Length: 261
Image (cartoon, rainbow, N blue to C red; front, side, top):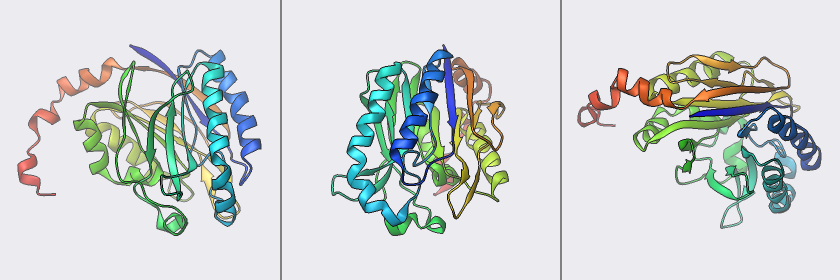
């Protein structure tokens, strides 16, 4: 089947959910106008990584998450991106939520690999499990930013039938070559689509370069942004996953009994 996807490569107003939600409303409206069935926002897109005010922001996030659910429902669109959210023990986490077009939470994933270089491990609790979501276009996996560096995570998703992974990010300069290379590597080695959405702008400490992209199972970029705000929209041919996996049967030929990971 064909799936129309929009990538919301935005700048984020640090610590200002109201401003970020207002922008998201406009971008969701445009994505819906283009016929998109799915829109993906960057990592921590409702607040940014505002560590100074994280405790206050975390207590407000239930209302913010409900507002995001209303966006999905209003525009009848699948919506993903990661946000600040409290876990069952009231600890702040970096959480990716996939909302369906009725505004329901179809899947929830809490980031398992916290990025110490940007102090995530000092302010957030890590998740403890991967998340696979059943959609009308097949199984989807959820991941966030730094997770991209852990190949085992994406191989696990592929072995569980996932045909595409959504990866919101705040990936900063100067590591553009890592971002572009790793997105392609995860797509090629697992023969699946990688949808990476990186923010742009500066949060006072880091500058973010965007280059959001959809990479197909052959490692080709269907669409890729530059370093400014843009709503990217492209069509995914979901059948390509099965075609590539049949043509080059790496899952049939792998020898896990010898790898000893």
